[in-house]
Image 1 (tube, helix red, strand yellow):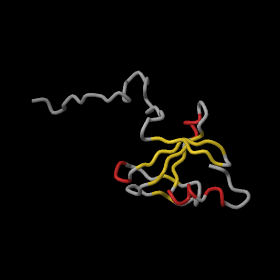
Image 2 (tube, rainbow, N blue to C red; image 1 turned 90 degrees about the horizontal axis):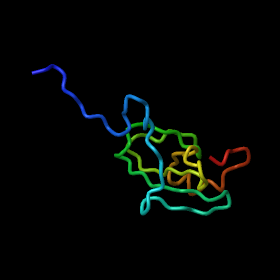
Image 3 (tube, rainbow, N blue to C red; image 1 turned 120 degrees about the vertical axis):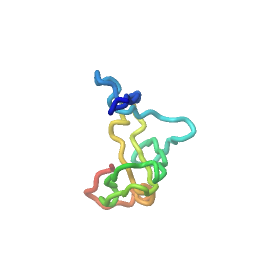
Length: 105
């Protein structure tokens, strides 16, 4: 028996580089569009156990640790998925109350 076993590559692991990044698309029934004074946003709830890495919340600038349920949002315009951000759920709800000098995302 060979010491190495062949592993089937996933659809985002092609050697030619095509599909190297997982595409972000709006998923019907999972994503929702929220309208707020700062614009329209596509919002997705993320369950904690599905994560493998930590993110930095733009609302409180604290780390969102792996295993913590949170929200991913991006602007609801074409190409807006490149600007997606991971937020604590409470920080997302309170983003309109942030003080001056803070970015919107």
